[in-house]
Length: 478
Image (cartoon, rainbow, N blue to C red; front, side, top):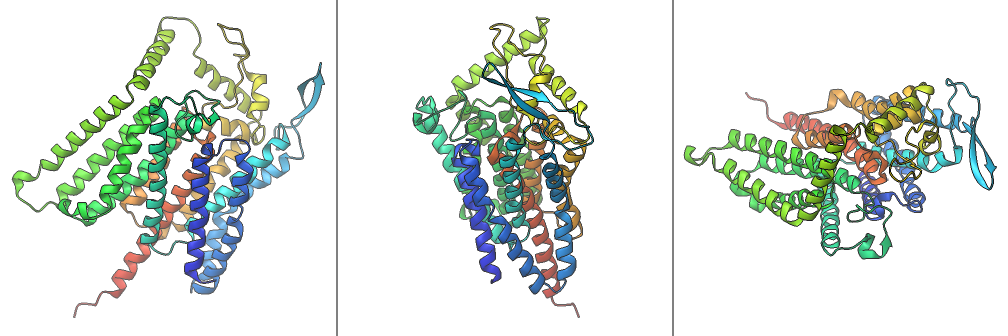
């Protein structure tokens, strides 16, 4: 199959997956996941086509294919552990007065086990198909221009989601899609069920937008930017920045403001180095940037004033409960209990998707202090701890290697650039945020994380190749 056709098929496949995951409840509705996994499974034949193309078209095919296959070994290791765990159920199900009860089986902590094997099947399918779908972005795109066009398609979808969510929020809708679908979470935004998941989506998309604007700023003078797509990128930046406080996500609003601050300082540095006009006008961009920042804050606060004030009151209540009461902090207790769960099966964990089934054994907050109703946790609100509890130290290390291995495979052929730096910066922010929340509890966020990670590596690799080709075509001085 021609190289261009494979490239188009991969980008179309990943683009449709991205749009579907973001619009269908962030991919977190139970009925959506099998359909997403089925579409994402097309990544396997596309991967084979990519490897076949490299093998037949690349002069150094054998080392290239070897590097690619070696970078997939951690994924194979994760699958091996999970598949073995399916044969060693951590619990057997019985019943008491018609209610199911879980009885623990005696299994060595050095043997991979799954608390409830059927619960791991769909998550494992999603993990593999999403990873391979994103991995194809490491192989298929043949030019940086094609990848930038792909990024613009992602940003257009993000802009539509932001506009849709804003109209929905400002209209007072109490359910998803303007009350057509009841929301299990009162703090939802756009098509996302949970506000912090929308915030995580904004952080990742903002990284794409900030990187693209820096790219155009590197290549054009300030007065020329109005004739480039940079103005469209700024509109997306403004939309994403405004919707984060509108969604009531406190933590992600801080991350978005931090991203904007870093991006603005970086843009001003680029302008300062490239400015060749009158010295008196050199500070003007900094003044305009400060005014634009203030205007964005004002508009954001004005639109999201009820949400901001409500979250400020909630924050003050949380602080007062910590300082003026002897009551234990719920989040600290949750983290402590999750660590105890992880420690009991540290090598391989309790199995994929085991947290809702196993944590109740370790939950010291089984009943609310005020209403005495059962408190059930389906997530640890700390993705790092939950991963350790479910996959153990060995499985968690292999998952981290799934991200690191492609860097190691291509480390000698990567060239630094603004877009790669911002994409990796956005992924890093989400990884740090995962210490305080569970952004990877959202299906769409998991997909986008892998997409941006592999797209960043590919963009850096193409930058290296295009730079090297440019040097090779320059005439030698006589």
